[in-house]
Image 1 (cartoon, rainbow, N blue to C red):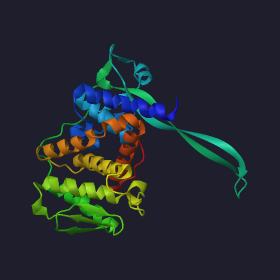
Image 2: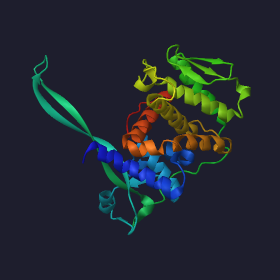
Image 3: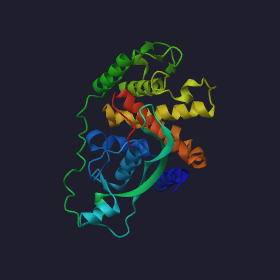
Image 4: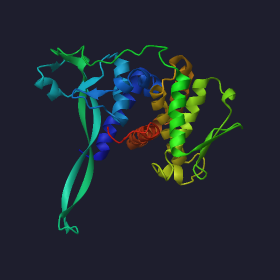
Length: 305
């Protein structure tokens, strides 16, 4: 199966869910199934990027309280079976193929080239199984409302990132922006924002932009100095907005404060629906780039699905 077909399969699933629910995925999904409760395989592998994104969304829409996912063959091997009428969710992975180039390195070893092919396979939530005795173990933990201090948690994450990368934040004025040339962030004063949650959401957005600097993740759409409103500019904005949405749950921002933020994010992304249909790879690529940006801010090794 070709690379584009795998992209199209995932994109079609996302668009189908949008049409069925009338909602966009990140309005709530990353609040309830994040961190320790992130989607994972039955073997314990934690999904990342587009896979985590879509599985968390589906779990919330379907009301699944267990964050484990399993293939048809794995379920069968465990003596369980997928319930009749249940529909699986496609997730993507890269298959690496090595080929001998016919050349030798300086030590006389064969030099091999690697090719990456995007593939997809179908998984089911364990709630979709019959004869599965392990349903209650390993399920998602309940998120207790009000158990976090949103400002303190967000302050720690943004503070550690900005300090680690030596990025200066300048407060004052009426603009929030990141300058790739100066490698600094401009923000309005704290008190100019509607709420602390809105302040940190905006700061996370600008931090996400800064991860694309040449000295960091080197995203070409950020560093090409493209004009406002161009496709490259819009793609970078999409990555930054999605990365900040991914991080909302990571830093424990309160759901009540964030209700307006999720609506704003959803409204922004909704404008991309036609573009997503025109280029199925755009959504998947943006998710991957946003996931890497969030991982970079959190100072963890990303890139895994």
